[in-house]
Amino acid sequence: MLTRHQPGISKRGNIYLRRMFIRGARAMLLRVEYDTGGFGQWAHQLEARAPRNKVIVAIANKLARIA
Image (cartoon, rainbow, N blue to C red):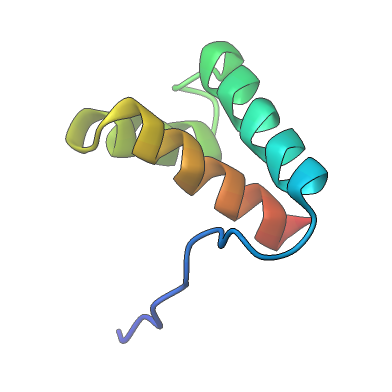
């Protein structure tokens, strides 16, 4: 299956909104239950292989795409 590369969160656009996504991602990473579903498992697997700040930005990016 081919996956399309999704760009990260750029520094263009609304800085307040970007900052809120980062804060929400940081809070989600602290509170997520890893065994309850797909999003928690995805975050846990990502946390195992990437630095914490990269994981936070990846979660913020995913939240922005979902919203």
